[in-house]
Amino acid sequence: MKTTGLGFGHEEHPLLGHRVRDIASGTEGEPMAVVREEVATHTGPRWTRRASIRPEAGSRGLPTALGNIEPLEAP
Image (cartoon, rainbow, N blue to C red; front, top):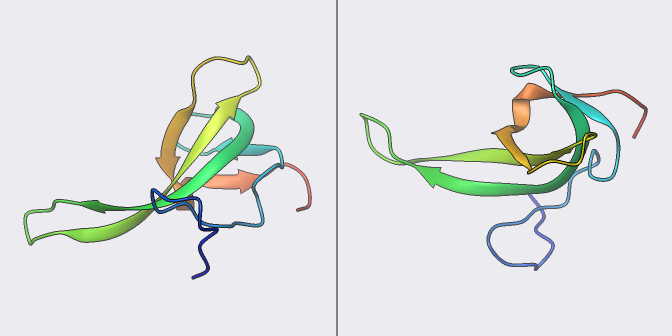
């Protein structure tokens, strides 16, 4: 897993800058960041990857699991 050196766990990802859909909410937009973050679970902490999607309507970014986004155009 390659990081960009931007801090805060930001990673490079082929979908950054491309139109995507968040499967969970149906929101379409552009992923602005992919980050690794530690989350607490009942069995202890684990790492997850999340994307922040800026909706096409231009509202506030929507955080979602990276596995919930699908491309709307070829990366």
